[in-house]
Image 1 (cartoon, rainbow, N blue to C red):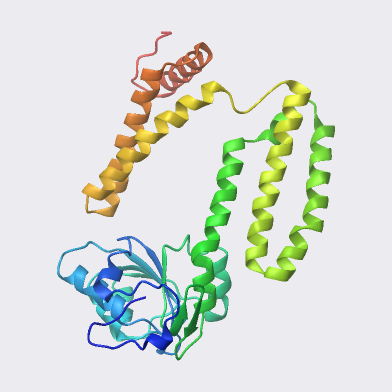
Image 2 (cartoon, helix red, strand yellow):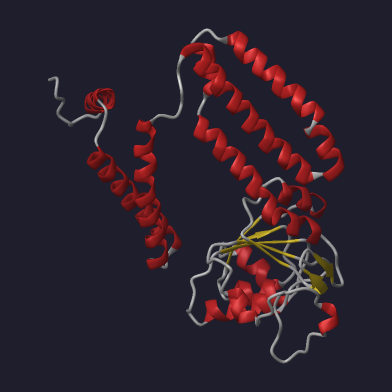
Length: 329
């Protein structure tokens, strides 16, 4: 929660052990390229102090901001004038209400997508705007797990809710990617009957658990059901594949790319911190990270089958690219 230094916050409106800070300090927690959800509708109930602090940091050259700002409707000059004129807004949804913001959109200084405000809450919940980094909302009172919005409710409940729920979707998808396409392997090894059994079991479990959870808890129940579905489905498919064909997706050999991924991530994050320009940081971080990843894998060594695969692919690329000598010519 932010507190202007020249304003007094009545203690009766704060319950529990809540951190209270000034707007400038709070703004430092907003990443330079953040997707920032802000409360407000009809130019009331929107945050004022934090956006102004972000605008000041961009205007003074302290930060190179490229924010994606999603509001519940129209907001005031603190966001659509000060923040926009400071060059801190790269993308804006779903509406702009000031001449300065409209001029920035018309002159291609800011990307703007007009959305019907009745759909913004659902779009935020289901990831239409990407994964939100932070929700900045105005409230007249708050506690550890609750808040009372100020003059305009708007999309505030959806924004506060979606700021953490999308992590469940990311976690579920990460688990699915880690397991790989096990269902395809079951089909390729003529174990369709096992795959059918797995699908039937997962469907029955979801009917008994996920549907009631969604009906009772709404989006949080749906997210938990999605996480449960992918975890249960991939786990059972792995067990069936191992039982029927003796195959397993996780062996000691799989540790090598995981180990190599650690310095890859470290290098990419270091470049992002050191390089101010977002696009240059992304390109340089990815290139240096991949180079580090390859060097670590080379150091750890490759299996004979992996070497043959790399040699085959290299030969095909040499034949496909004109002017590159082929080892078989």
